[in-house]
Image 1 (cartoon, rainbow, N blue to C red):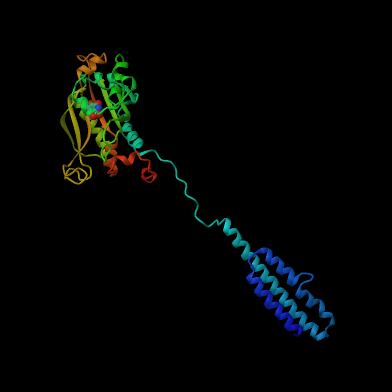
Image 2: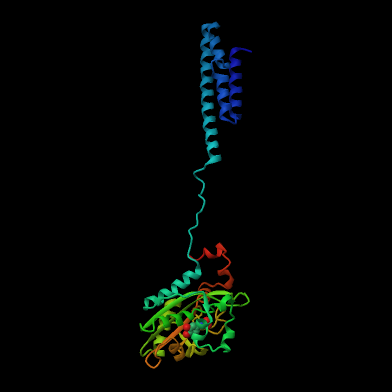
Length: 339
Ligand code: DAH
């Protein structure tokens, strides 16, 4: 093999092995093998002394050309391998890992929305205990001991003759008693309530209500209607008609249930309102004189109105939620929608 052939052989061998190298360590070894002090190309250069001046010039030029080529190939391979190495541990071009911000639970949001509307009308917030006495849950609200209306409140009784409140109306009895000498009273009372019901798409053992009431001199049913009109329009939208249907609650007389014209079809009839054109949203009435008297308020001098709004139902109507259980099974994919 001529010395020039040897140089070409070194060249091809180097290019092949550098291109196949799969680590930086191996590249460093190859560099030593070809270009190091005892490297194969270095050996060729060292042997130039024994050649004729012409040969020396030709072989020297060729060997230097190959040296440069090998250096260049090693440099290229080095940057290829170091960038591959970094991408396996960190690739700044990949999208980041998403972080979810917490959101207020849709039930709390709805309760805040409802309370906010009444607060802007001058109502203040009051709260009461979940574990309630029979007295405040029933007696003080004019439910006689064997009154059939108690059957509608399927009650969880707990130790010590207490119960889990079946509505937020007992807070009304508590607050009237507490503030009987500090009239007028104008309160909104949000909170959790409990009933011993079979759980279904429409019913749950635990749900939420917002009760409200106003006691003062000269309060009439016109004040009640004005207040509920303002609330309904603020919550469901302007221009919707209200319908007061006579109803019965032991603690109000007269009593009514309020329907609002279905905000989806505006009263024409659709799936949401079951073709009736109306959505039932709350109960209300003028506070029964017995309830005022039991709290120590003179029912000859003072009158008042009261109302109770469910929380889950308006939220379901407004957001098109078809199963009340969704509120309480902590499915984050459901809850995160409402932010
Ligand atoms: N407490 C009633 C219920 O749970 C709702 C209600 C109706 C509350 C009329 C009131 C009211 O304050 O005036 O079914």
